[in-house]
Figure 1 (spheres, rainbow, N blue to C red):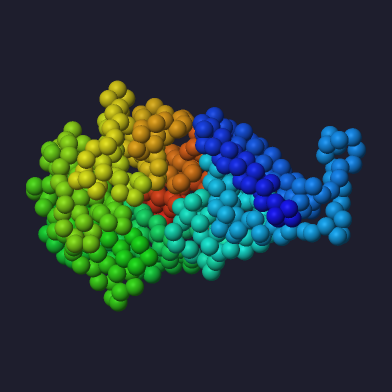
Figure 2 (cartoon, rainbow, N blue to C red):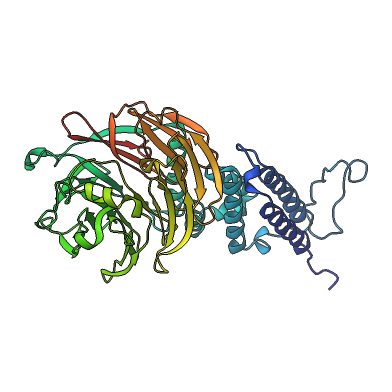
Length: 507
């Protein structure tokens, strides 16, 4: 018993120190940090430095009674080289791989929360420098899968390994921050249309593989993102019209295998992307007389949701996308726009409402006077309400991501708020918004606002203005962005939309 190894003792102390460090980090208010330097990131580097010293000393010195210190007492802090005869203990004995993986994930998450998502990779690099055992953990694909999910919210990989996926997300986000991208215009054959409004784009939607563009005549054109080619044109089945724009596409839901789109008359159509012949079927036939016009449509993995205007008390419609049955109808959000809802079927009007999915099964809707958050799982229960009765909101300047939404009033003052709590995260101002039409969108980290043909970008976490795009796009009809791509449809005097695409992951 006298010679029992006690090398685990300093490592137990290290574990306790790290748990204390995590408790310290979790108690810090995130909003108090600015820039890339933060109290927790400095503490993290200090902790890793101490950890390297203690790991080296414990493995080199063996038992607590061995070794000597040069200089006067311990004040010098320089350890004598271990004797060759002294037993050395492998770090693997006290640092099991699951623990190191959990440690690396926690370090990356802490860094991303305090200093931004781009801080996760440098923090991980510091962890992997501790020793060869810690560096070996970096070869675990399971670790990179955890990191991709916790830091970048990715549950599926587009690459051969999860490490490649993580690095791709980091590189693309850095490119977005620094305006490093490639610009394209997308082309399609316009000869198959015979109506003046057929080439006017009404909405855009991105997936990992495709860009879908919905037009005023009810067609959806599908483009492949890797080669920018137009690959399919989807058309709804023929049906009687209730106005010039009743067949205009009001919203699109897209995955890698299926595309769902809705038209302003309330119809919902489904097409298999890899199906033969471009066939579409009608999953739901709208009742325009009793529901009004479908001004926006979106969906998630389990639900479709539509925002209607025209009939009071029937603003929201929710469908189960598996059974394709209606599960909820109700809501008064668009009651003040009831009359204008009917006008949207016959004439070009300002946008009456926008509808977005946030956080999986939560929907956020915006009209000129009000923003409403509803729970799709609980039959449209209102969980958030944000009114602007004094100046009014710019509906086309509204958008939402997984955690927050951005709203803009008529003066161009934009406020970013958390969806669930209505907490204000930051504010910024869009100059000239009062005189010009603004069209905006957000991805996970950025807000993009276009006015007068100029696209400007802000950081949605701090409200910092970053840059404007080099290209001028004209009058914008539709805009969409994800973490890699930005797509814009703009029109000219001929009413023919040009589709612009910026790719931040190509370089």
